[in-house]
Image: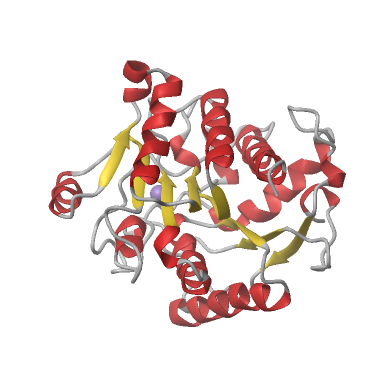
Length: 300
Ligand SMILES: [Mn+2]
């Protein structure tokens, strides 16, 4: 079973390469089982129709799904190495592919983003946009420096990432120590409630302008599903009220794809065991992935 029955081998025409990281050992909430999300999200695509909202025929998109990376939950260093090798091998196979990772908890973003930022030739023009209800800016949490609650901080610590090319959007559940630390580092984060004050278009432009000001045109986008409101995405470990609607988020992604070259993206923190019997969160995740692919695809 693959995502929308796409093929499993990178070919001449391939643009988008989906893979799963079935790893949730570094979450700090035990009821969440995001490790099974990659397969669940593939599974629900079997029940979805084959056009996007804008009428693009999904089977015509140049996507492959390589399945999941082999993960041993507690073998952290080994997993990081395997993920790094996996991502770098993708570029060996075809240098202009757009990797798409399905997690897993949010820490899965780290090794993928690190590998991609190292592969990026134009380091000056590269930025990272994290959608999350949380800041995830703890230096250390739970099992240590590697945690789903430290992902923004570990991202900031990457060689080519700084406060001019990293932005966190949709925040609304921030703890005092991480807020102080983010302020100290001058990290830009855009709280979720401002979407009502600014309006959707101005809110979206705020994000676009942040990267434009820094002359960033290549983006890595990380989507923690908890950036959406729990009323539309209930199946996640920390369900925080006040998030984006599906339509708002769809619009934001559409505008971003129009404004930037999206080099890669990920979607993490879906916990299928916390979903409704109709799998609404996994379905929303699948929709977001295919819609964003089609937005990017209309440019490449
Ligand atoms: Mn997160």
